[in-house]
Image (cartoon, rainbow, N blue to C red; front, side, top):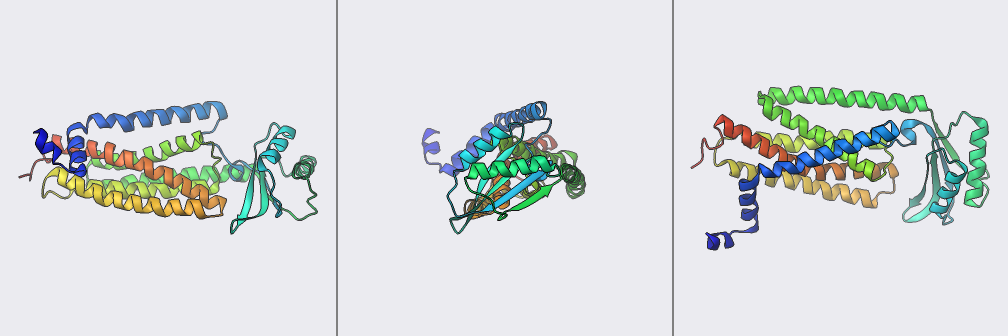
Length: 312
């Protein structure tokens, strides 16, 4: 037996390990999901929101100052936060072809309050060390607009999940496989939200778009896995699982490379946030699709007596 095991390839060993311990491995996604829910709960208790909202979601101003000077962003941010301790302020550099072309300052300042707005501009001048001279642009986002957008997108996500569940149920005509597809997509979103919170990322409207895209990526792999395991009856179950895993991981890894390249090379902060959310979500999806859903569907098939129906 030991000699036979030593001759097995790495792929065969992984398959054999999974085949033996797939039920025990279910604890991995369960623990991750529980920890994610706990983090989101703490986030809601401490901030009142389940994510850290950026200026574009909760309202405020964005001041863009064109300059080729290398500004110390940490010092500027520290000075602004000292003068406006009750506000959420972030400073980032604008680059073009690797060269600094400006500085963007975001703050949840009420742009309609003229006195506060002017005081903030003066503070920016003092922090940067040079006058603005009207060579700057200001983007004003009302809190009502940001809140309205957030609610509409949240409603759209719920509707998307409902219709997704209906389509999946019509496709497979079985409750357990259908609910595993939907639950995996939900888990991918919630765990990604928890990770993004832990990283301190302030989610903007672009980040919301990233979460919406993540739903599609999650469903793709789950539909592939469920179709291979349920619709195909030829061959051994683990052969069907291996085939689905090979195809699914090829899709995921290819996407990870493309998204990773976009994240590291793009100069757009909005695109970077979208790519970051998709990167995290794809890694999370690997765990929930190929450990959780694979095990649940296998247990379901075994109880139905389909798992060994056509095995030699």
